[in-house]
Image (cartoon, rainbow, N blue to C red):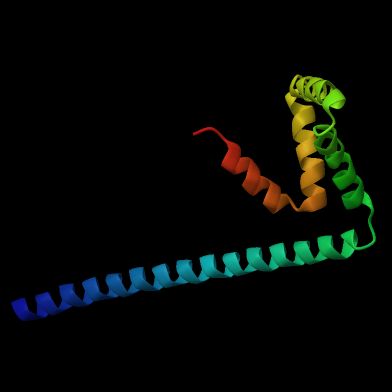
Length: 123
C-alpha cells in the first residue's frame, strides 16, 4: 500500500518535472526563433541600405560637409571660426543635435553611430 502511494507520488512528480522541462524547451525554442528573425531582419535592412546608398550622393555630401571644419583647423586664421561654430552647435536644442546624429546615422549606418554614442556616455 505504501509502495503504491510512493509510486503514485513519484509518477506525479515525474510528470510535473517532464512538463516543466518541455515548457523550458518550448520557451528556448521560441526565443531562438525570435533571435533568428531579428538577425534576418537586420541583414535585410543592411542589404537594402547598401543598395540604396549605391546611387545616392548624400554620403559624399556629408563627408565633405564634416571635412570642412577638419581642414579649417589647419588654417590658423580659420580656427576661431571653427571654435565659434562648434560653440554655437553646442548651444543648439537637444532635439536638433539628436536630429543631426540621426541623419548622419541613417547615412553611414545607424548601428555604428549608436556604438560610438554609447561609448561616449559618461559612466
